[in-house]
Amino acid sequence: MLPCIRWLRLILLSLSSVFWSRAENCPSNCLCPDPHTVDCSGRGLTRLPDEIPLDVRRLLLADNWIPRIPSDFLVLYSDLVYLDLRNNSLSQIEPGTLSTSSRLVFLDLGSNNLTEIPKGTFGESRSLIKLRLGNNPYLSMVSEDAFLGLTSLRELELERNALSTLKVGALSQLPSLRMVRLEGNPWVCNCNFANLFTWLLENSHKLPNGVEGMECSLPMDGRQVSLTQLSKDSFRECQATLTLTDLLIIIFSGISVSVVAIMTSFFLASTVHCFQRWSKGTKGDEEESEE
Image (cartoon, rainbow, N blue to C red; front, side):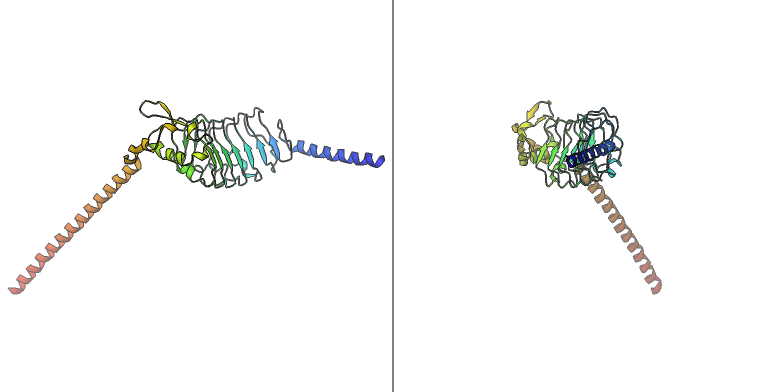
């Protein structure tokens, strides 16, 4: 009987030491259900918690009031694979903040106050598989190179934001993309939307509900129409429309040609003038020699 009691006592002491060490490493007001998970969801936090274990792998910070992430926050957490920051007060993510998260697989930035996703926001997080950016009501701009380097990204959520247009390059440079959500945005059916519309038709299998779940507004009267009512012919006029870039290229080319023509004319005129002077001088010398 005594050996059993001793073994039971050892087991209880071991368990108590494990729970005690876990509680010591866990940030105050947070839960740590396992040695590599920190759950601070719904704690009314106005900033990131202190003393997060360096070996954390799952960090849950949803449903708080966190306004920003310091650019060097993730430098120390090289094992982090799951980061949930949905439903906070984030208005921007500084470029480079997430570039050090080489093992990050899941990132949720949905339901915040983000206004734009510029180039370099995610660095080259090549391990990132799922990225949630939906339900940001002020998110109106996504750079064409916003997702550059996310070669493993399979799921991208951009639904219910304030996007009226999106460059196709932002999506076409994601070789592993399997699912994208774009519904619920105030898309405008103008020439800026034409290329995206073509991409959507060709990649409708990547949309959870196909193009049936998407609408855009007509530029003339703002009337909402389903994308199923449109075709490539709806944007036929856009093929003959020059963009601002095209116009600038044409103008610059015209100026360059004009400058070259002026310089060439000046060179030729100078050459002719010099030749005429040389001819006159030669004739004068010949006359003097004859005399």
